[in-house]
Image (tube, one colour):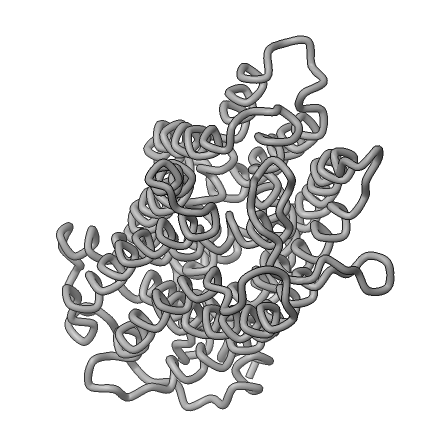
Length: 461
């Protein structure tokens, strides 16, 4: 077994998550807000606001194509990473090559070449978004594969996942402060569009610095069992889905991603349209959500070790159903709008913390179980497939969200915004039913008793 990763290296690894969380948070939080501007935002329309088939907007189509491309590249990058024989390691070499273009493409998503509404801006956006998703995958898929390889036991993997959950929230929280930053530029006399672009460029530079920290701090060959796989992509994908527990869990995870992406992309609309609060409140709520979740990280870590990860995820799904239904009624309750906003954060903090920590640990456990059972280490493909499914979920979410936002009454799309909460709650019920089919005991017993797994394999052969 390779050396145990020291605490300083664990922190360096986790800070890489801060970097990519910041960059993905920029696009995830502001893409729809920027390209489907409301009258309250003051943002100039830069791409045509038309719909195809009565529901598919141009931004929805662009996002769908980008996410489809992103999803297709996940198993490809995962396979290339699993098979890599680079002297810098199977994972670090990809992360190093992706870092700078990842940050640059994040900025380009919001830099339209033509002033005002133009099809050229739509074409430019599609190209920039495709590049963004490509380099996001090149960094994130190998990054998550390292979680399974740097953590040599379920406890170590749980601790690493807790650390990266903290840095994920920190990165997303910093991204949520963009309105604070662009308002500074607005006061300096810049236009709304220029202010947004300058703010996001500064945040992207910060993200790049953190992307590079694990690249230079971790010697992958020293701390990881880095044995290249010889399986080709299609064979590796088939082998991955033959793992029944992985298939069940990743389908539940897919549904979760559709729901959470719908909620996150709608949050700025909840604040500005339903609650009629200033856009700067979005950043405040996100910070409070992160801090609230932090309070539960240590308890979740301890409870998961004692009672199992599946039970906590079941509880989280149930709590999310309540959160999303509550979100559909924001602005209609007999309490102040500010209080409604803070209550939303309080309700969401615990399930966000649970889902922030545990799914990656479960995937890492399944990958370890599969390696023991088959003798082939394919951590990249397991995490790549999970990332693929999450991006399919995000694609479907953006498609549904853009369609819901077209629903208007008296010139306002309030009804569509409210329906996002109902839509997300219904999905969580489906995700919960799928999660109940996951056999956690089988995976953990297989990891703790690898000899038994090996024997059962030999008997079946």
